[in-house]
Image (cartoon, rainbow, N blue to C red; front, side, top):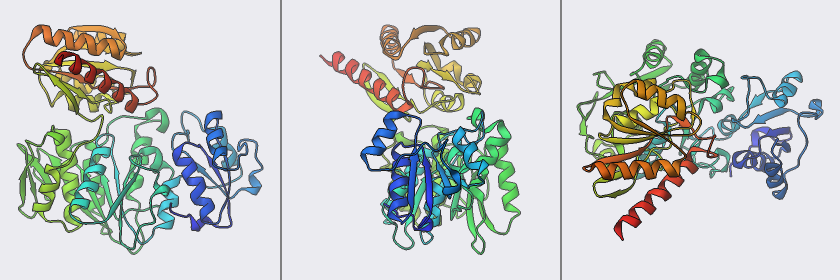
Length: 458
């Protein structure tokens, strides 16, 4: 645990008592602060009470007695409307922050690497962490991926902390800065929480907050309009060293052409055959990770070794089974159309399972890759609308309804048609209509795929 000594002798309200909220409460108390906490969910309140965290209804609390609010990133800050606890804190003119802000206040001697982007930030964070460890550089990982940040071990002087940062988390920072800020990409997502695209971009750009008297490094993906604009803006700021990264376009940073990674020092590495970094989207993760690893002093040989033995992450193009030439791929993390398009671009002869609660981009980003889809199997709330969209584009579809039915339908049709094929769960949707989160959706797909393979082997 990292004690939050920066808030000692303060009375801090903590709202949201999931794992990270409870970790924050304990870290504040360990640093000498007084904590009162609340959650709208009774089960979460009971979990906190079981850990001796003091509970007070913060909506009706006397805010003249409270110094600040630490808010869970899952709680609406501005849109679609502020949560009542946010309104109460603002009415009392109390600051509202998140655990990332508290981390930055209390690990000033650590090297903080922040990674954000609409897609790819989990893989990039994990790949950077893995590569640094392979290279002998002490590093911890946390944030949106991994353990709660205040539950990490206090870092030694100069130790690296790799942080995956969502737009929600960045929205709750006021002074936090990062030694290396990685911005991968941005496409429409979470617009209900940020009001519009500009609000979403503004939240993401908080990763580039400058630190007085300290030159920072920005690693910026330039494969979309927003990234190119941010790269141009920061390149004109002497406070920042900017390293552009791209797929398919030469630059003076790091880029990939025809599956070969190149950097400004003349190094190159063929990454086209790395199964756990399959597809152009993973090549973007690789170029960003390469840039960070080189900044931290690792040699191209060591980075190449790390990439080669990177194990990959669950729910991101995760191969979970194969039988009779039919591969079963779990890409449950693809919760929007842009992410699903990356999966479709990575395979051919796809029996595609999609659906759930549709995001702002719908299926539009997948259209260039629909020629790779043999059949669509649709589930959840978006099944009917997705069926209409895909049928209009000549894709045969089956409305399976739920995941169990969809994987059975998809595998049976792939086996009937014969030949090599891929049964791909890449939903292009959030999971909340049928599963609490994408991870449980992916876990269920893995269980079903394992059972299919076991039955086929009998």
